[in-house]
Length: 384
Image (tube, rainbow, N blue to C red; front, side, top):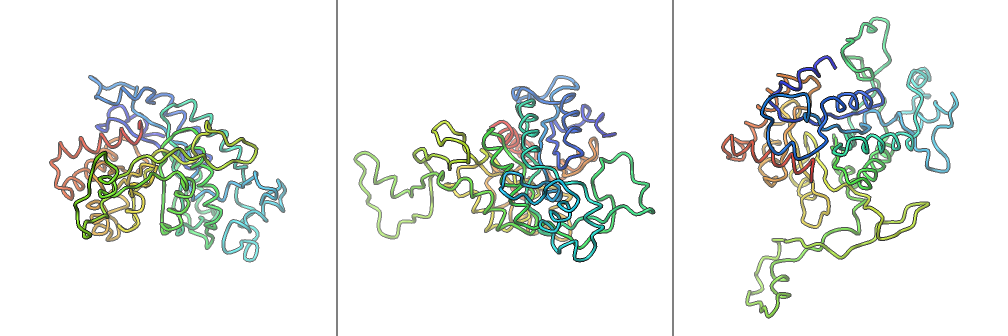
């Protein structure tokens, strides 16, 4: 929070700031109340002089690293019943290995679980307050392990950081079950769909199940895909003179007829029901394979999926070659950039400049051309 005052002086025209857990939802609200963008038209051109307004697009979500802190209270037998024994039982069900089989004190040291429905309602109100707000950061993470509790030697934590993060603590052996992460992710995707908001998605070592979870709500809503031959055949008076070797692999998508969304418990399945999948998705600091990203950009997909890249994540630990292969395969209008950092000011500006230069070099764009493309992509992702 100490770096927030630098936002109006930054070179970056605007930033999306992600909430991830209970401790920072109100902080993102606080920052957006002071620096938030309320009218997308202000993002179409830079201000004549630095101001405190129109710099922040907030985003509200529950990150998979903290998904164990929520329990699904909409099912007949929730994993948590509000008791001390229920707390142990909840963490035994959503964490692996089972904590009580190794160390009951570990679960006792965790926060009491919160009801998922309560968090969704709070998020809905925040999204209503900020009409351009996103849902995020949400997603799945197979690699993440929970940190251990603070020890007496570690209690002198850095006061400038929002509580709840790892901050150098040793990691425990416990991971959040993928099935539980998917429940929390799916609920937030549906909220974004109902409110027509784009989402920012985190995915680590779980790209297959991530795709399945994101794609599940749009089943039955896919766009109809016609080959060039089919389009020629249905054109008025058209005749197909092509031979049997004509390539049908080049697709064009046209909207399919309206399909009713699946019926929700306690609701009527009327034509007026909103869709249960978000209109736009950003897979942030994308680390999947080219073959996987192609599933997201298939013309039948009704959600417009973007891919963002950061120097901090994508070019670390020898991942540059894989990242560059992905960037070359992604359509120009689906690329985004990010810092994935938590300190506003020069550090983020420098990180954004570096990733812009890298992408321009990979794509063969001139720097001005590339920055204009990336800026336009960001506006279209946020504003639609």
